Length: 283
Image (cartoon, rainbow, N blue to C red; front, side, top):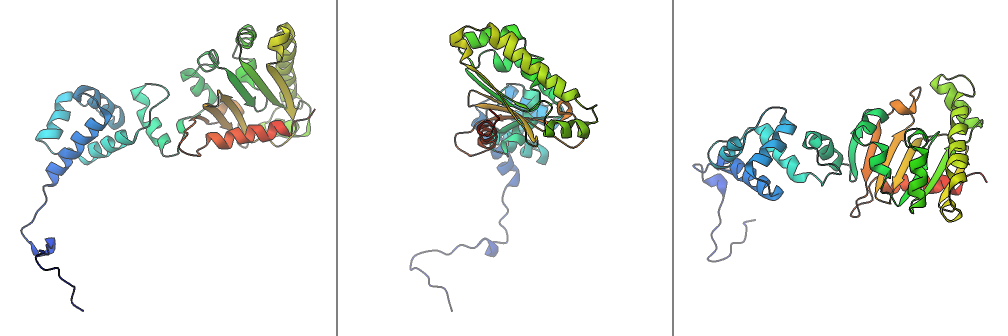
């Protein structure tokens, strides 16, 4: 059946125009210019971001040429597109741009670090906790709170208004014993550390707080298979670590998550994990 043809309308087919050749170089230059405009950056600042992703030097003059006269290479076009898609980072470190951009693919996952020590080198506990209004933590021994953040500073922030809710894996319980065996520790080693950390919070922190501030510190235990160490800050930021087979918690990958109100993301999942564990805690 022949196609209907509207009177007066011209049917255009590129296939019939054998001489037609799109100017791909100009299209690529337009894409570069549009990417920089979308980021609202100067040629120099955009060049610095490109260099951080490409792994080789890029100058402002190169960016200008890629927008006006020279055809930008394919890897440069890919980097420019990724930069356009980049979410606003928690930290303004251009050298970590690739980590932040890849995290953007996973909604609110904005950083992945090889270990807890690598994460804490970039985000020390003081930076995360000093100005927090609400902190919720669930895991095994909660060393980030009890060993790397001073008890004096914990008292100060709680007295100043911070609410702190801590959930420990039950010392000398069934599941902490299983974790000791899995990590190759002598029996009772992790239990003793966890009991010590709980004592620090109960005696040296809670025991020295004013009555009004004491109500803002809650401590609980649970005895279930441990899956994650979760730290939630101000209903906005989450630090999460999986507990992997035969790997110490400190050596496990660490995920930095910033709540994205436009998507479900990972923050809501980890928040629900904490809430569910807290509701099932032992009295």
